[in-house]
Amino acid sequence: MPEVLKAPLVVEFPFTRSLGPVQSAFLTGLRQRVVLGVRASDGRVLVPPAEYDPVTAEEIRDLVEVAPTGTVTTWAWNHAPRRGQALTTPFAWALVRLDGADTALLHALDAPGPDAVHTGMRVRIRWAEERTGAITDIACFEPYDGGPPQLAGNTGRFEDPVSGIVAAARLDYTYSPGRAQTAYINALGGRRTVGERCPSCRKVYVPPRGACPTCGVATSEQVEVGPRGTVTTFCIVNIKAAHTANLDIEVPYVYAHIALDGADLALHGRIGGIPYDEVRMGLRVEPVWTEGGRYPDHYRPTGEPDADYDTYKELL
Image (cartoon, rainbow, N blue to C red; front, side, top):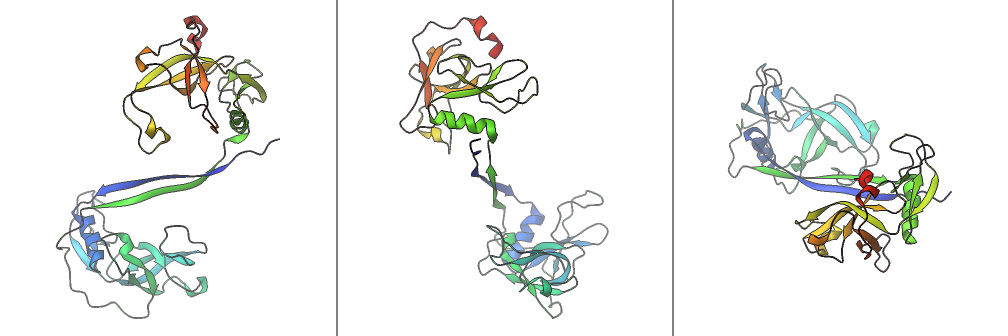
């Protein structure tokens, strides 16, 4: 059996959030080396601060300064830091209850090894050299054997408060298309299109998924289809796509469902070689390959008469 394909993939986007008065004061305070919590209706001081009371759900804004020192309440050792984490060497994730707070803050704790960390140990904030008004202004926590420092009683009033943050959300993962789609992709490399036939209903599905979507049984019999096919439905694209391989395609253009000859499922493809306003249901098309391309660049008219509606109505 040919080796199943796999490839590393990354999904990444910037997440932008505006800040209300509580979160704005908290992050602006970090920029100034000040840690602020908020007092809830039951008298507890919450750090990080919440915008709404966890008991009454009412908005709360009574900001309270707490110390940059505290106590580890629980922890877990991270022996292999990942990209973008607070430290590049092994460290502990720790929940730290800062002096003056009633809840714990999660952050990295810099320690030489897991034997140097224990619940109840005293720690303090190590501030980042450059601070911008983000949680990363706390570089990490570090061991500390002293008491809490004297506080100035800051109430959260700052000049030039932080009004919003941008956080990069990123997911790194390895994708494998599986046995059926690996065969499909490998065939495309040879300018062939293959599907798989269901042993029960005898329909041929392209691209194959390894199982019949109608009967739910496994498929394995490969069937070569096309290369010509019929446009079943289509749409006219009037907005140029951003950050994709379609950047060089002038709008408007047509994207269509194409039922390849011998297939019982339509696949997607771009239609070219014809004015967009002349594309129609039933149009007969064939693939156009670019030099070195591993899949058709687009489909163009074959010049054949349009297919009769009854031949593709079940594939709409």
